[in-house]
Image (cartoon, rainbow, N blue to C red; front, side, top):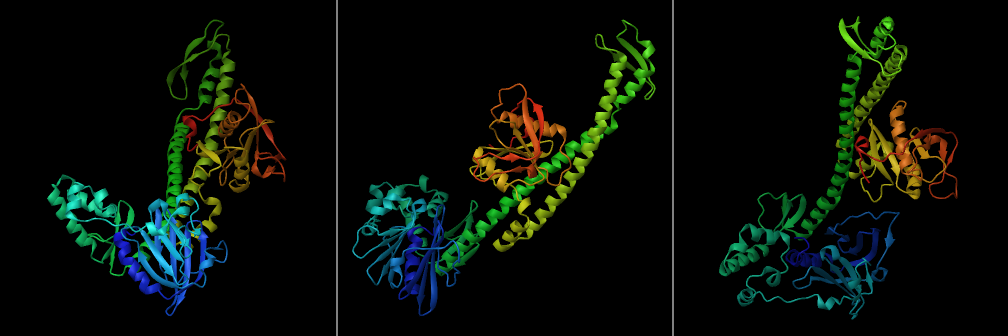
Length: 527
C-alpha cells in the first residue's frame, strides 16, 4: 500500500514537517533506477531516495547516505539552492508534490511501472526535466490535472452498483484482497456499502504494518495478525520497507541465486558420481573379455573348417560357454578382438577412477563453497566471496546475456558459443587456460569449450562428442565427416583488430568426427 493514496496522504504531512525549510544542495543518480536528493536544514542533512524501476518502486528518506565517488551523475541541477516550501499528496492520486520557494514544482508520480520524477518551472504546464525518458506521455503531463475528486456518497455507490474500480479506484491490491476475503462479491448492495465503510475506517488509522504476502514485502494499513513489524511514523515505515524489500531483498535474491546455482551443480556432480560409481563396479565385477579369449585360444583345435559354433568349458568359472564365429572369421581373430576389448576396459576403468576422484574433489569444493556462501550476511560479505571465488562462480542464468549454450557429457560441462561476438566474449571472460577449445577446421563456426579445471585428461568419448557439436554448429554441419581442431585454451589467442570470432591457434590436433547436434546424452541445459 506504500504507493496508494491512502498511505501517501499520511506520508505527505510527515514529509512536510521534515523537509519544509530545507535547501536542496545536490541531486544525483548512481544507477538508471534510482534518483537521490540531498537537502540541508536546521536539523542537518536529509535525503530523498526514489527507486523508480518497476516492480521495485520505493521511497526512502534517510538522514545519512554516502554518494559514490564513481558512476554517479548530477541531475536536476536547476534545483540546486532552491528551498522546499511544502509537500502534499494530490487528491485521490498516487503522486506527491514538492513546491519550492522559486515557484518550481517537483512531482513524484508513483504509478507502478509508469513511475517517474518530474520537474516543472514556475507556471509551466509541462515538465522541464524528467527522470525516466522512456515514459513519453510524461513529457506533456500537466501536474494541475493530477488532483481528482471522487464522489463517495451512497447514491453514487448505488448508481455504480458497488463497482469498486469505478467507485474507489484508489484502493490497491491489499484492501481489495481484504474485501474479497470478507466475501464482498457475494454480498448484497447494502452489505457491500457497510463493508466499504468499515474498510475506510480502518484505512483512516495511521498505523502501518510491514507484512509478507506471497513472497512480497508490503505495507498495510489494515490489521495484520502476522505483521513483521508495525510503525506509527509513515516515514519510518517507508524507510524500513525500502531497506527490507530493496536492500535486504536484493541481497537475499542474489545470494539465493548463487546458492541455487551451486546446489544444482552439486546435485549434478553427485548424480554423476552415483551413476559412474555403479558403472565402475559393474566393470570391475563382470568377467574380463580376456578370460573368454584365453578359453578360445586353449581350444583352437575344436574349430574345423565349417565349424563356426562350439561349446567349450570355461576353466575360469567352471561353466559351459558357447562361442560363435562370424562367416569367414578365424578364432584367432576373435580372440585378438577380445584381448583388445579387455585392454580398453582396463583403460576405461582407469579413466573412470581418475574422473571419479576428481569429481569427488569437485563435490567437496562445491560443498565448501556452499558453506562459505551461507555465512555471508550482507552485500559486503557477498562481494568479498564473489571476488575471492571469481573463477568458481557459476555462469549467469540470464539467457539474454549468456554468450554460450551449455551441455553436459559424462559429467563434463561443454559450452558452445552462440555467435561470432559471443565466441570472443566467451574466450575473453569465461574460459580457463586449462580448458579444451574445439572448432571446425578452416570454416566459420561456434567455439566449443570443454571445462576441465581440476579434472584429469578428458576422456576420448567426451572430446569426440564435443567435436561433433563443434562440427554441427559450423558450415560443415551437412558433411558426413568433418575435421575439428582440438587444443588447450592457452594456445588460442585473439589478434587485435581481427574480425569477431577470429583467433590464432598456436598448437593444434585435428580429429575427424560426424556432425551431431544436441540430444538426450548431452543433457541440454539452455538455448
